[in-house]
Length: 443
Image 1 (tube, helix red, strand yellow):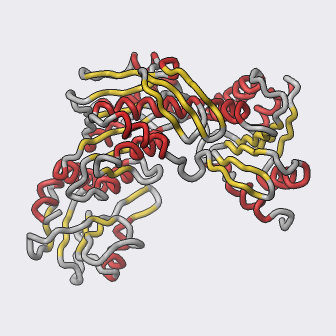
Image 2: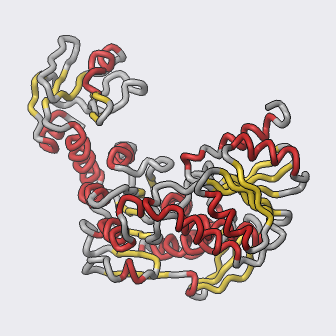
Image 3: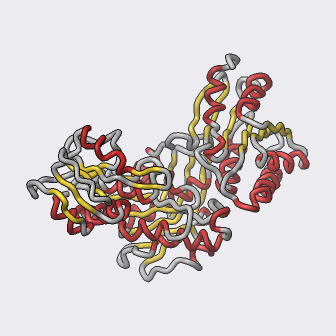
């Protein structure tokens, strides 16, 4: 962005200037800043990026933004603004309009990262496409994603996360999506938002600035349909619209609207994620063969159904995150498809005052599954509540306080040939179990 574009986008005051036809890249991180970049120092409750302005210049930054009239001689260009995060969003919004791609926003209580990756796998075959990196789905991640676009970018896929009301609306305001996808509304973040109705309200903020000539694409849930405010086309889908032909480990085949598709992942919830991709792709006039090929090419990213062989065991790590809905769906899929199953469950976070009840409900749900041969291992005080419900129903259950305890038990008591499934919230750090298993008895 040129100096005049920066001023036009943000209303910044120019404290120091040089040739106005120079294009600048924006960086918020002195660890990765490149020569000639402009440093934009973000602020938070426990950090102040303006303390690192001199460091940014030493590493080659051409200039910087400041809220405090900081003027350093080694800078070629300096901009003064009132709020650096707001400025970052304004610059990203300006650049989004300058490149003018088709923008697809994705949110949901679970499945949004998987859906984003599936959609990219399809769209990138035909269009020059940029997507949110990993799960960098807050307002800062949105800006970073926007600035990854090259001038020839045709599609921008923006994953939108939230922890409270107003956060998705803020991202949507600057993203101005042409299409919006809501994968589902469940109990994730209910500890903060208190009710499912509030969660639905927060997710449906994605439609606040949605192009009226675009489309709102969502799971067929009453709480979404009763909340979404959008005057344009609405498309709803569900697993009930599908004929599942084949289900096995790392493979699904299904028919949707008279067309057959395959996925190289298991689980009906992944089929549902694929339906939103199919609907979006056809709105973009992508042909059936390209959609089919792109869906089958999708592979899960780190900590999402990640299958590895460790110490003679097959281990599926799905511990990137967990909420009651995603835990129920993934465990159901696992016990239906895998032989010699061992399920390791950890605490689910951010469930608020009803956290114990949510864990007990999960246990009662698992107790109704046709899976008496499954061994359940729990880690943490809340997950112990899941185990207690399963024990009442006659299941094999062992409960542990930490990752080292459960790892020792696995190494000492399970048979080679068991398939182990790991599911917990990220805070449980289940990757430690993988590391301990890799070390074997060298604990």
